[in-house]
Image 1 (cartoon, rainbow, N blue to C red):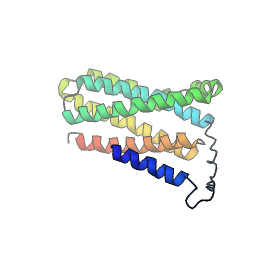
Image 2 (tube, rainbow, N blue to C red; image 1 turned 30 degrees about the horizontal axis):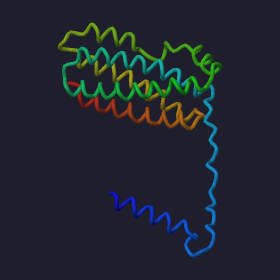
Image 3 (cartoon, one colour; image 1 turned 90 degrees about the vertical axis):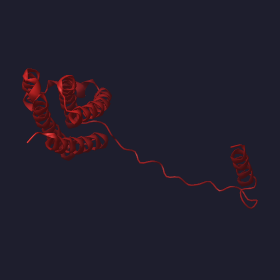
Image 4 (tube, one colour; image 1 turned 120 degrees about the vertical axis):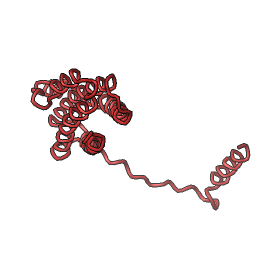
Length: 188
């Protein structure tokens, strides 16, 4: 390691003295980074608020699922969903705060109740017999993630913030992949 440090010092010294041939070192022209206005519009704030509520419901579903599911493959999938969506939830909440009080207020005035049947799904999951929990969990979570994918897909088209559209793209892809995995795990 000491030899590597010596080589770096020698290289810096040689390049720094006289600028490779005795003349002054020419400055490197750099372009300024493009300025991206990533302010969340009303539609972006609405999407974030809807996804915060939806993700909270997802975390509730997987929490019950982790308490009750028996198939190790199902447990592994829902643990991964919990990790992913916990991280996304923190990001979306931060972006909502950054959007400011008026954006948050506008988003929270929207009635989110028609976007999800999570409450009914949670009731089904909690009431399911032990032998049916994995099947009911996969059904409830599949329906729930379809809604998330649809919301995200719509945001990709309608959103104005590049970072929110990027998140929506990732949500659409991940929820769609989860739905496919759950179909493979569902008992025939």
